[in-house]
Length: 98
Ligand SMILES: [Zn+2]
Image 1 (cartoon, rainbow, N blue to C red):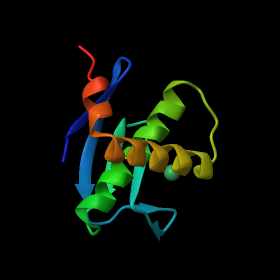
Image 2: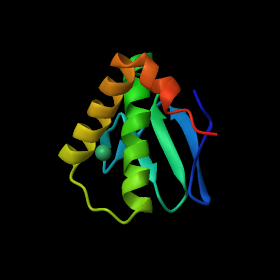
Image 3: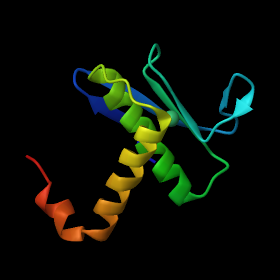
Image 4: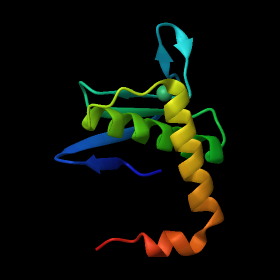
């Protein structure tokens, strides 16, 4: 899995961990804005981990641009984006910048 995600002037470190917890409950992933760190729970499938990374990336975008999105909105954007990229291989080439 990718180790760093750059956004704006910042860089998030991406780490896979056995235990990813928030207030005692197990999470698929989490993002720590203070430490610029994304944690992905190791115990899920490769596909689930990819979707989790994308989910946390949308949280990073949310934070970066000062948006206030609900979990449902983040989920919708994440799943919609993943589906579009999956179903449109030509679009992946089209969107290659630089
Ligand atoms: Zn979330």
